[in-house]
Image (cartoon, rainbow, N blue to C red; front, side):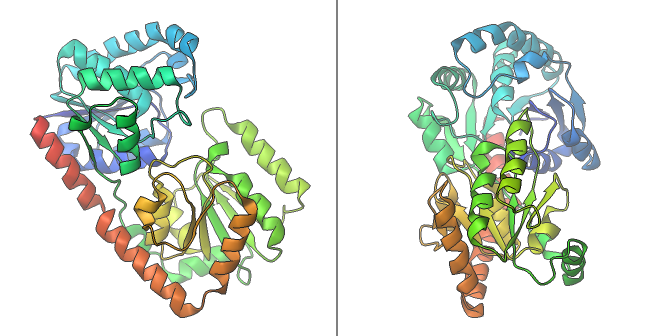
Length: 383
């Protein structure tokens, strides 16, 4: 196994990929360092876990390239990418293995690995498809991966298939599903749940939770529109906008007002107590309108012992199984409404059976131990 691993991530903000980075870096904390290209809550979280971390002074224009950027955007970004790769090399030369954890970090780290002739393992958290990335971006990152990486890990079979379909080498890629620790969900008490619902005045009403970054493809608008047909139901929207997506958040607030739902939709913003919030709702919904490469919130909902209604696209079936009864067509408020009504009409025995089935599936297939074992195996092979 390599002596020292350098993890690289382009953002200091917290998202699903960053939650996984914390878990993996903590696992290797005695022999690793994390480089971020921008500061944020992730740096503090890593420090709290005993992980060495630094922020590289990088060209911010490189970080603002959109996922659908064309050849002109890509061309203009080349000097900044090369400068950042060269700066990263100053740190990376002290490490045995480079491990990029995000798409933008991958391009730079692959170049750095080529400069230094260091092995690279890329953990791919995205679906490399036309729905998410431009053709040029996919060609660049897949071409670099085929040429410079020793191995690619993906969070799901869907992500693996998309990488191969984009021209990726199928002989150097495997799946290491993201692992979620059940302990934070298991330790939430009924008193905590009761107190939280009392704080918001939600003791006697049904509550639906939607968790995740506020961005159009996460589909918060789908739930808001569905609530117009559920007059007694309240909703918690947990998460915030990132990367310049405040316009969509404002549109959601305006939609809420226009539909007269201000008293039934509760905006909680970015929160660190997600397990407590998840345990405090009655149903959790996943409303993504584009294919989800993994769906961390789905596994978290399974561990929170709640029925989840999930958009039937991307990795949802991998997580919940083909026979799961509450997979719904993405982007359809009426269908989501009907599913919520169906869940609420289930009797206690039906709900308990489904919750137990989901709980055991999550603990067995999507545990941190399994993920880290998968990663350990590849790290050992590369080393």
